[in-house]
Image (tube, rainbow, N blue to C red; front, side, top):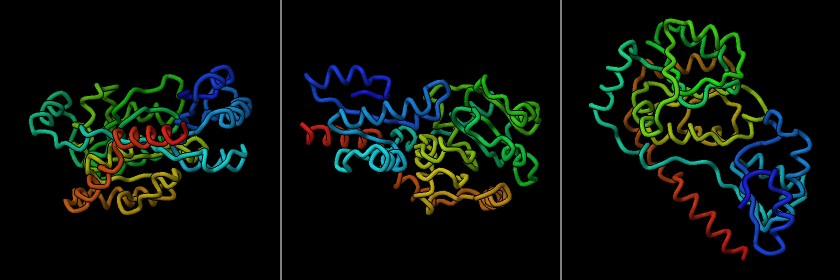
Length: 279
């Protein structure tokens, strides 16, 4: 199983001896310094050389069939997923420990959890800090040093926005269940349109209100569990509504039940079953 077109030469050699498969986790043509069109050409050859390809989003799978000419029955959709730990309710002691470490946090808390990079709309987050209905905004994750957004620099000095840095993975369920609103503020980019955001499935399992921009096709497939906005004003209106309404137990239960269908264990079972069918 290879995970990027950079392994094309290996597949050329190994496919004569062993069955080969491809797992594509993103739109690699959008990665800086990965080759752009060149990586697309390599991927086109790769999907024809392997027995079967797995793509994390429908947009990527469709491109393989439409643009690369690979047969549809040699392509499968296998989105990202979440873990059981995000479904498990955290304790009051765990929440109090974080509040003791970060006493400046006060609700309603709007949070962005995950990598902090140029995939995010920092202008939107900045406007979120001006909403009187929002207590504070918390940014949980490491900041990409290559990101040169002026809005990000302003946010880092904003007294209503707190950057807590990269946290241990085991601690993320606590952060996610502390939020009053989980915000996924993706910009409208080719990479975001074709992505499969793990943070979405983790938020789904955490049972907190989710507000997201409408640009990611995979998130848009779940309108019953996430509130979306096509522009800043629409998203800010939804954030205000969520802050006022608070946690809705019925919706939270529905979100967690939906997340039970999107566990990594289920994804692994599907991939293994499909691989066996190809042998």
